[in-house]
Length: 455
Picture 1 (cartoon, rainbow, N blue to C red):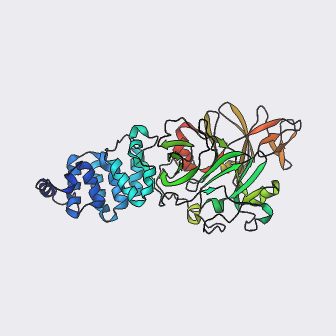
Picture 2 (picture 1 turned 30 degrees about the vertical axis):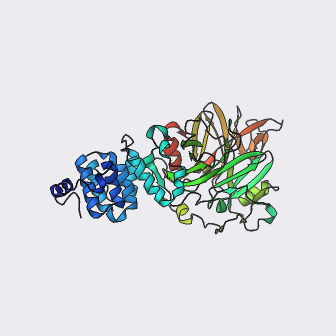
Picture 3 (picture 1 turned 90 degrees about the vertical axis):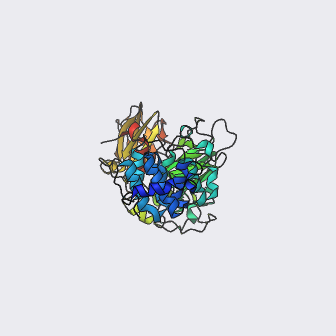
């Protein structure tokens, strides 16, 4: 059946003699888009004719949802969208989502809210915790409802690790020397969280060195960000989980107190009661490096135990193996690839009222980069083989690598720690929080408001 190539006049006539059709009972637009998934053949045909005759592309976001979940009617839905938009994008949901992101001026019909709620709550009724109608109005959200996509799991389908069991480095015989870990040190409390474990959980809530923190790890965008979770004005630290939703291939985490959705990349609430609270989670420094490097320089470190309370294959290179090895993305997002490929790694800093990224491959030429962000002078020490980058304020100093260490412009040697660079006279230059990320995530969330180091 081809909606647009068969006799349109005949279908319109059929619809006209059936005023009691299900799609016309309440909001005719809502019932028409519902027919893509829930209507009979005749209801679907009548609904599509109604939308064509109406002629407004504001229903395309709903039809994109219908096409993703209504595979048997995909061809016909695509024809209607092409008629309404004059775009010949075929039947690929991926391509239509990119078109939708590109056309931010298109305001969806209000029926998108009840339709998308119905579809997603049909997958998991617990999604109602996040998708309350009062928070889904366009002026109440910091992101676009039409671009929120289901990531393939239910609420907490990727379970967070809350105050997980830790063991001494000497007992971590399950780890290989070249396994990557998130290394964290706060107030002398040193921890290692292996990526091969965190890839299955994408979130931990813990207290390190007396500071409540959460590691938000988005495997899809390659970024693990350590946030402080004690927020001014709130009695208890926030505790986070994974919602099951994505926005432009970035996980939307949620806090268990208000069930607001948060952008993992920015640490800001984007849907829910906290949207206009002014909260932005403070970042803490962390580093990705090899287990061999971390345990050698932090002999008193503790590390995650395999006893997480969950049954997963925590073997090296198991979790997201195909995705990490591929240059392709799993979910649709527009990205400028004129300078960098979408899954090239960058080191990202958002501090001092500014944002700047350093391509990881810049450290192939030199392990030490003297640069600046905003009005602050920085020095960055990186090792692309370990995916490790640390940033520090440098004030007026200019550093170079020498004899396996760091020296300033006068030749004095400085000591590198997780908290600061320490000079021979005891001067301390503080560490600056940053994190590794795929290029596409940086470009998509901060590209217009940020700068990129060009060497």
